[in-house]
Image 1: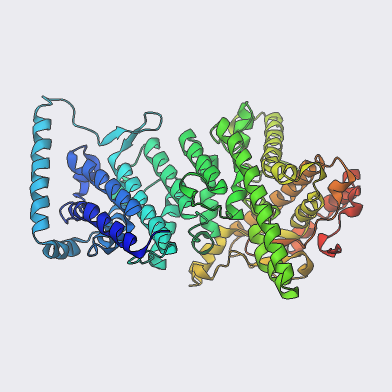
Image 2: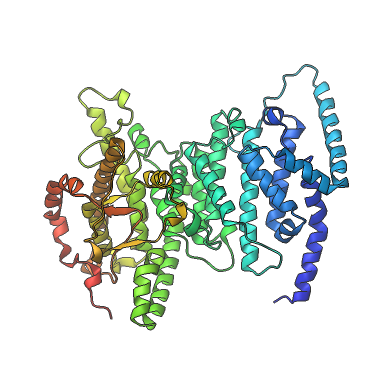
Length: 588
C-alpha cells in the first residue's frame, strides 16, 4: 500500500505533466466552434476541435485530479463539450470572460491559431484547383466517410463519459480534490445519448444535423452513443440503477439489432466485456452487472440464412462469432451471479426473518440470474418483428409488398418470426439452465414465471409512461427500477387509463406478443427437461419488476381465455405436478 507522502508526490508529478497541456487545450481560442465553416469544411480548424476533444478525454481519463482541480479548466471543457458541441448552444459571453481570466494564455493560443490558419491556407493554395474537401474523413469502420460534424460529436461524447467514469473511480478510491459530477449533469448526458439512439443517429444539435446526412454519419453516432451508455452502466460506477431509465434501456436495446454491422458488433462486444468485468470494466474485483443489461442477450443471436429469416430478426446485421462469444460470456456471468446470489442469501438467512425478507424483496431481482427473464420478455414484447398470438403482427407485415395474394409469403414470414423468437429466448434460457448441469432444478421456476407473465400480466409501455410523466409534470427520478410484484401478491388492483386509441392498440398488441412469447419460452424450456429433478421446486418466490408489468385488465384477459384453457390442458404442461409456486416449498 502506498503512503500519503508517495500519493502526494505522484499527484504533484501528474500536475506538472498535465497542467500545461490542459491549459493549452482549454484556452478560449481553442474552445470554440466557427459555425458553418467548422462543420462543413475539411480545414484544420474543424479537425483541430476533434483532436482537442480527444486529447481532453485522455487527460480526464488518466489525470482526473488535474482535470478537475486545474482552475476550473476541466469544468470549462465539459461545458464546451456538452452545451456547445453536442447541444449547439452559444456561450460567447462566457468565452470572453474566460479569455480575460486566462490572460497571456489566450494570446499564445491565438498565435498558434494564426499559424495553423496560415498553414491551412498555404495547403489550399498548393492544391492547384483540386476540389474543396466535403468535410468528410475516412472512418476506421469499413472505410466509410464520416463527416467532421459527426466525428466532433463523437469526440464530445467520449470526453463527457471519460470524465464521469474517471471522477467516479477516483472518488471510490478516496482521491483528494475530486468531486463527483452533479446528478443533473449525469442525467443530461444519459438523456442526450438516449436521444441520439432514438433519432437513429442524428446529433442533438440542429447545427450539426444538416451535415450528418449519410448512413455512415448516423451509424458512427449510434455506435458511439450505445458503447458509451454501456460504459456509464459499468456496475462499478453504480450509475445504472439511478440514471438508466427503462425508456433509455429500451432505446439502447436497438443497437443490438442494428442494420449496420459495425454498430451491432461494437454493442455486442462492449456488453460482452461488461458482463464479465474485462477490458474497461476490469476493476480488480468482479461486480454484479444489472440484470436489465444481461437481458439484452436475447437480441444478440444472428438470423439464419434466408430473406424471411433476416427480416424476422428486424434486419439485424449478421455479426458471426461475436454472437457466439457473448453467449459464452453470459454463461460465465450467470455462474458468477448465481454464486454471489447464494452467498448473499446465506448471509441474509443468518440475520433471521428480517434478512430473508430483505433478500426476497430487494436483492433477489438484482442478483438472481433467473430474474433477467422478465426483462428479456419485456424487450421482446415491444420489438416490431416479434409475432403476436395466432399470426402476423397487427403492424404492416415484413416485406408486405412482396406477399402473395394467397398469403403464402405472410405464412412463411410468421414461421420465420416464430423460429427467430425461439432462438432469441434460447440464447438466454440455455445458459441459465446449462450452468446448473444435468441436475438443473430451475426449469419449473422459469416455467412458472413465464406462465404468470403470459396469463396474468401485460407489459408496461415505458415510452408512454415516460411521456405521461412529463405531461403530468412528474420527475423521472420518481421511477424506481427495482419495485417488484410478488407472485404471492397477485390480487393487486391496478388499472391503466389510456390517453388515445393508439395507446390502447399498442397495449393490446404488446399483450398479445407477451402471450406468444410465454408460449414460445415454455416450449424452449420443456426441451431441457431430461430428468425428474429438472422439474423439482426451485427455492424462493417469483418476483417481477413492478415498473415493467401490470396486471392485465379484464378486457385483455378475456381475449386469451380459450388459448389459456387449451395450453393448460396440453400433455407437455401436464408434467407439471411439480409446477407449483416455488415459494410454497419447504426451506431447509
